[in-house]
Length: 204
Image (tube, rainbow, N blue to C red; front, side, top):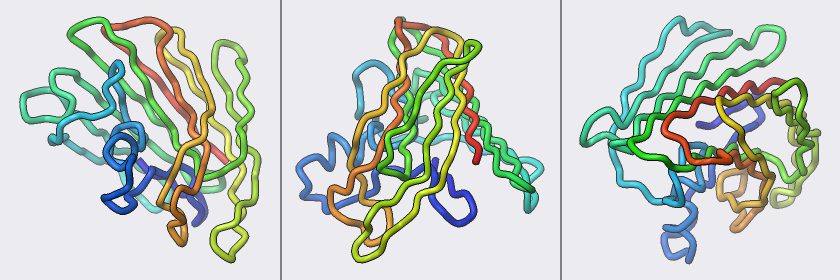
């Protein structure tokens, strides 16, 4: 999942460097380099299909639902994962992402949000929800000075979670600078679970 507000990237993914890159398989191609589900310590899953449905898409709003892991041949099987994304972008931008996971055995679950910025996010807990403020910032892309937008994330989950901000590589932004670094929000359950749900609201 990538996200753009007013023509500027907000959420990105690691992208693809040269196939000879030493961390191509372990990072860029893995779930760790994407805004997707990770189960346990396994960052490499086999390729598979997923279903995608969309409703009520207009110039300013819409909704898309992804489901996978329901049967053999689908990605993540036998883990079931659904993601619903709905958005409103009339006077302000607001995107709500709802993730649901069902597992056959107790495992820890991790999600990542790759931010299109080098700026360290500010993380706090308020009324049971985790609020993340990402200030606007500047980063040099080639000869160009790029300004990343200010955004806010609010995360709530069905079980206790830990949240960390870590650096990571990307080969996605303009000029595709090798080993350019951005910040990643990592969300992990504090205990092993068989079911997990999480909502992330991203706004400007």
